[in-house]
Length: 280
Length: 137
Image (cartoon, rainbow over all chains, first blue to last red; front, side, top):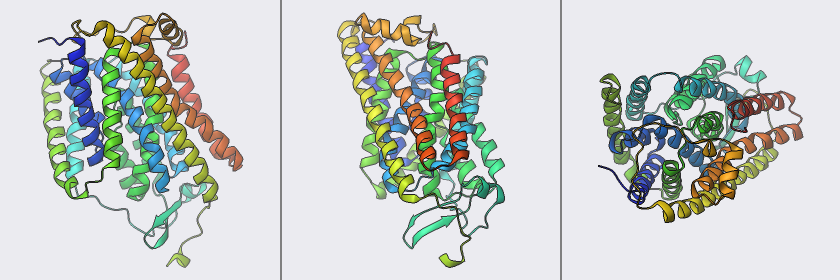
């Protein structure tokens, strides 16, 4: 079945709006479901889908930055230092994306989706408090503080090399798949580096836009960014995520997360299936 | 308990914060400007092509007028809706890059040479990716 341009634009804009809204409400990010949705239900070539998703990732990251900044949790030094890793990773990812077969892209995408679904069901372990300062982190001035219920809370960043390497991987996945790769960032910043959750979430939001910009130029110049497709995706996701950051439905978030995680799981299995059976 | 904390590096919080707020607003302005340009392009594009069929099944790659900065500018001059959409997307890509440039200024004001250097590395990677990809040709 083929859509006319008007029908296609309206339907894709609505789907992107819902994805952006759910992604922002659940904190799981909307970009991760867009590529599988576009390829599965709209039969869009995965390369066009990745290009459009990457653009929407920049929009949500930059759009949310102003409201995140007001909360005063983000650490611009951690962000800038780790951006060295993510931008180099994004270059590598964009380079690989143009060279590996689309079936391999689908399989990697499927694996990332399954991992994101798994991570979203795992109870969040808050970073340990009062860790001793790490020599490298101190030299790099990564330690910081943020306002807490009990006043200023100080934190000492741990295992810098491990976090830096993981962030390189996060950047590569972002550049290869056109996603924010929030799941890997959580692994790097929360688990490896012991950064408190509030700080890591807001800081990684800052980083996502810069990381995506590092590969977006390559995608655009290679002709992966189609204006007719990127337009409804970008506008829809942006509107959805801006709305999502305004309505705080705390009571609903738990069941919403469950539903969204189930959607991610199904889409992940589907991408794996399509990748393995060469159906993409 | 706070007294037992090791003395952490204090990056003059009020200054850092002011820079961050400026940066946050810069990013939001960039995104809203980009969205407005994309929306204008969308109106022209839809007014002209609403009833044509879509086909994204086969990857062909965009024509050069939508792949390079001069090509995009030329197609905007020709009044193409899709050219305007691409211009909006270029503004969007430029927003985080502008943030990195402003961060260099911020770290320089704080006389933090190490972070000026780090930020320059990030900017170099971004510019390499943009210019090296042939987008400026």
